[in-house]
Image 1 (cartoon, helix red, strand yellow):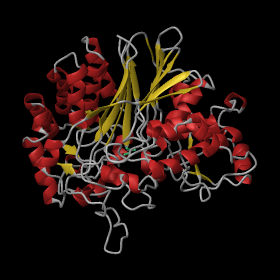
Image 2: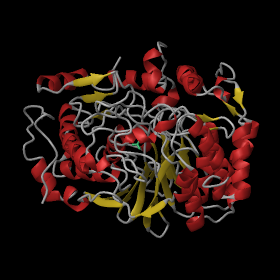
Image 3: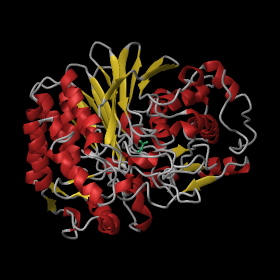
Length: 572
Ligand code: GLY
C-alpha cells in the first residue's frame, strides 16, 4: 500500500491529541479520498461541525451577510464544539468585503491587571509545571463576546438576537456526540475532574450517538441576547465567572472584564508571486511568519520539486527554521513592544537570511539564531471560512488554547475558560505547550496580549478573491496554512485534495521536522535523514485541521473540509 493512501486512512480516524491511544485499524472510505469538495454556486461555510456550518448558512439564506453568519457560526461552535469553540476564549478575524477592502479584528485574550512577569516561576526562577496551562491562573481575560459584538456593530445587518437565537435553540435541543468527540471527552475526563467539582461533561460517560443538552449555556446566551455585551463585561455573567475563578485561586477581576476591548487592526498584506495574501497581524505572529517563509522560498522554482519530495521539504524547512527563530526573538504584542515588521518581511533581509542555506546538508538551529536587522502540536483551536452570496469573505480562527482550555468549566454559565496565558513566554528560552520559545518581547505584563500563531488568511489573485483559509494547531497553524496555499497555487490541487494532504512542520526549536505519519515517501525521508535532518513522525499525529474555500475559475466555490476532524462544508 502506498504511504500516501495509508495516510488518508489514518487521518480519517485521527482523534487529536489522544491518537496514540487509538489502536483501531481504519478503513479507507470513498469520502476521504474524494479530491473535490462540496461545490456551491453562491455561498459556502466550512467549519469544525456540521451544526455550526448549517446555522451560518441559514443566516445567509435569511439575507444576512458573511459577518452575520460569522457571529451565528461562532456561537454555534461554542455550543457544538466545546473543545475549542467558545465564549471563554478569544480569536482573530480577517475579512475581505465584496468591494475588495480588507481588515482584521483582534479579540485575543489579555493578561489580567494583577498578572506579573514571573507569575509562573518558583523562588528559584524555574517554571512551575501546569500553572500556565491548567486551572484558574492559566486563564486570560476572554475576548470572544467583545469580538462578536464589535463585528456586529460595524458590519452586522440582522439583529444580534436573530444571530444568537440558533445557538440558544441548539443548546436546548442538544448536540449529538460524534465518535471523535466521545473519545475526546473520555480522554480529558481526568483533567476535568482535577479542576471542577462537577460539570456536564462529568455527569455521565458520554458515548457516540448520545445527545448533550446545554441548558446552562442556553441560559447564558439568552442573558447575552437580552442584556447585550455588558452582561459579560461587567454584568452578572461576568461577575459569576470572576467569583468562580477567584474561588479556584484565579486573579481575573470584574475590572479586567470592564476594561476589555476588541481591536480593529490593519492586517499583514504581502505578495507571493502574483498572489496577494492578507493574514493576521500582531498579536498573532501568523501573517509575519507566513510572509517571511513564502518570500524566502519565492525565488525558487517550486514547481520543479515534486510535492512533498525531499527538496520541497528541505526548502520549506530551512525557511521555517529562520522565520521561527525571528518569531521567538522579535514578536510580541505590538501595543507593548516595538516590532520591526517591515524589516523582518523585507525581501533583501530574507534573501540574506537564506544565503547560508545549502542543498547538501541540514541547517542547524543551534547555529541559526534570530537575524540581525537594520511546541507540541495539537489542534485545540478552531477555524472556519465563510464566503457569502454578496461576495464578502471572512476567515476566523478562535481558541481556548489547549483542549477545553484551562479545564475550568463555569458550571453555572455552561462554558469552559481558556488557558491562553501559556502563549506568553513564562521564562525566556523555555518552551510553552507548543514547544515555542519566547523572549522579552512576549513576556507577561498586565493587559498585554499573548503572542499567537493563529493565521486566518485570505488570498487574492488578479484583484479577485481566490482562497479563504486557516487552521488550528498552535505553532503548526502557520505552516499548515502556507502549505495549502502552495498546494493550490504551485501544485494545482483542488481545495479538498489540498486539505487532505499530509503536512510537515519545522519551528527552529526543537530542531526536527515533524511529519504526519505514513504520509511521505520513504525515499525522500531517507535522503533528508542522510543530509542530517531529524525527522519525527508520530508524536504529533496531525498537523493542523484546515477548513478552506477556493473560488473556482467559473466563480463557483469549493469547500475543503479537513478529514482529520468532523469538519463540514455547507452552502448554496
Ligand atoms: N493558542 C494558540 C495560538 O494562539 O497560537
